[in-house]
Image (cartoon, rainbow, N blue to C red; front, top):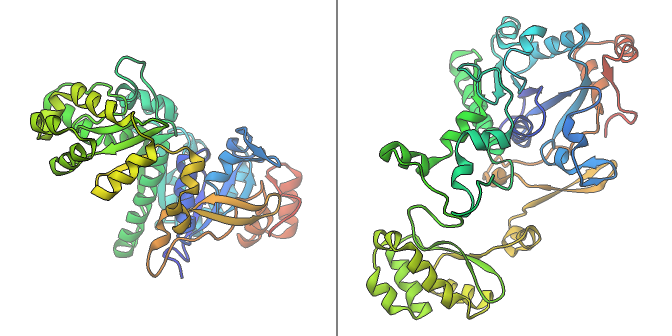
Amino acid sequence: MQPLSGIQVLDLSRVLAGPLCTMILADLGAEVIKVEPPWGDETRGWGPPFVKGESAYFLSVNRGKKSLALDLKTLEGQEVVRRLAQRADVLVENFKTGDLRRYGLDYESLRELNPRLVYLSITGFGHTGPRAQEPGYDAALQGYTGIMSVTGEPEGPPMKVGVAWIDVMTGMMGAVAVLSALYEREKSGLGQHIDLSLFDVGLFALANLGESYLLTGKPPKRLGNAHAQIVPYGAFPAADGWLVLAVGNDEQFARLCQVLDLPDLLARFPTNAERVEARKEVVEAISQVLKTQARAHWLERFREKGIPAAPVNDLAEAFQDPQAQARGAIWTLPHPLLEALPTLANPLRFLSRTPASPSMPPPLLGEHTEAVLREAGYTPEEVARLVEKGVVRIQAKEGR
């Protein structure tokens, strides 16, 4: 039995942060019902790449869910959600602040029907404050929260992180919040509302850089691939490619200087504080030596001496790495259109007794509409009327 077996999640979210949160819950055993409009979550149309009409973006965060294609703007559609919410343990949504109140589907309304409901709202800026009504997109939030100001080369423009960094972290924080609320419910018997914003997560994730600013009042600058408080720490070019050095203490630096035959550098800058002050000189000295040999040569030498280092892999190299293969980093699932679907394995798969595991592949649009409605008490005739009125959509090949 998985940790969340018996927990039902009503997923009204779309795009990335919310769907990632609910996919994590699904991997842990929850039954997740994805409520999407009859035309589908917008990420079904985001691409390329598409494979047999299926979007890689959508497939990446919707594993393990049932698809209920439903028009929330109709009174009948809103009643379906109310009926489902009465028996759900968790509801996750990422509508703009106040939008669901217009439909009577906000936390206050649904709490009257189900006091045990854990209700997670994910928004750009939260339900309070001067920006509460503004939409939130990852790229904009990377700008608002300052991460772009410290990402990129010192003389270059601000850069966003290569993936939707704040969205991904918000999804993970959302799963933590839901699990915390479910645990507390075991004591109180009551659900609660969770107001989670990309803005708050983005500021929190500034970690040591954010704390440095709070203590000094000085905004950190862009350092490219370098570390604000550790030297040498970053990407360096070898003769045939790039590698990363992560020299975290003075003992490791001494071993690095031994491998690179740089005794004078060690004598002049034995402590990290001294190296940070002389960052440019230290990095240049190390770079000149690393350029003389192939990447594999240096990585082997560093491995022998216990110096933290790694290749700068592309994604093909990352997934083909022996460690990724040994740890089962890819889950392959059956799919009615794609046959074998490779997906990113949940890192929680190593719980010793109750590991995360996939229950089903990402759903086709409306694939489970009829089954979900029947389980909610709708008769075949009532389902047919909802289909005829355009309130719901049923996928032609129901179920797997």
